[in-house]
Amino acid sequence: MHKKAVILAAGWGTRLRPLTFGRPKPAIRLVQETLIEHNLRQLSGLVKEAIIVVGYKEEIIKEIVGERFAGIKITYVNQEKQLGTGHAAKEALPSLGEEFVILNGDDLYLREDIERCLKKNPSILVKEVKDPRGYGQVSVEKGRVKEIVEKPPVPVSNLINVGCYHVSKSFFKEEIEKSSRGEYEIIDYLKKYIEEGGEMSYVSARDWRAVTYPWNILDATEDVLEREKEKRKGTIEKGAFVEGKVIMEEGSVIKKGSIVEGTVYIGKDTVIGPGAYVRGNTAIHDNCLIGRGVEVKNSVIFSGTKVPHYGFVGDSVIGENCNIGTGVVLINFLFGGDTIQVKVKDKFVSTGREEMGTVIGNNVKIGPNVSVMPGVTIGDDTTIYPHTLVRENVEKDTKNKGA
Image: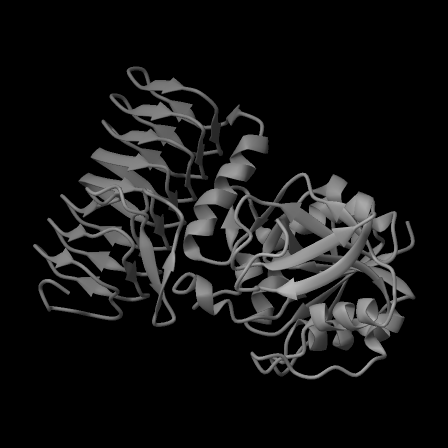
């Protein structure tokens, strides 16, 4: 165990907004731990030191991780200018030995996949998917990487690049040009190595999840919930009905008349009920209230958020310290059965989901009897006034009914 890891955690996370306005993507919490904590735990025992390349809101990552985590020494390197993953990796080189593994800080990796990658140098971790469109693709031949193509219009392979590489310092000695995004990309260093006759192995990942867009938080939470062990440290009142895997932290309460159908996570000091209904792959974090007559299905609700009376939260992600009024309905499907699209950076992106509700930032207040159409994003510190039908993305206070 002499190798080191580089974790890329400097980015702005713009495609995950509004959930990243106040924190970097690797600091997004999934069930009991953040993304970066999850990945460091996977590296425990495989490397002796992790160099975390930080930038945007770096103080949050430093506070979460500290100087040592899960037996791994932590070193921080600051990427002052966001010049791409290749530039970030080069910033870490002075702290590295000859061989090291690089990981994206905002993807979910599995220990056994990283371990298999570490046995081959150089190597790249790939994942076989049904639809590779929108991903960098890796074409292979006779156990070696033949070509790496970044998001081709016509797929060349169903193996996609998942952003984990076991490489050497020598990879970064070559000069590369900026990509079409105006950044220096790790993948361009690898492509140049292969084009010049270098041989690279590939390892097929058993499990991996990108957290690129807000709805990916739902997918990643489901993945983590599947692996978590059941525990019920909170209180289940007489008259509450609980079945399936339920993970309850200390101080949590499921009140009488409530129904909880796992797999469900309930954080510290969170109250469910009385008479609430929580189901699906749902994570409700610390100090939340899901009150009388509220139904929550397949959603993630971050700490401090209250949904006190009668409403429906379906397939949605709600940020911290929100207050959702009586009779609010976060609609999660279109009657035609179409795939839900979400507007991200002024462009509509398919979620690939037929059921997708609302993405709500932090400190949002939604008044009584508001209905929100599927795929809408509501930005931080926004107030939605009563009796409104919200059809499109909203930021800050709005009195415009039909916003």
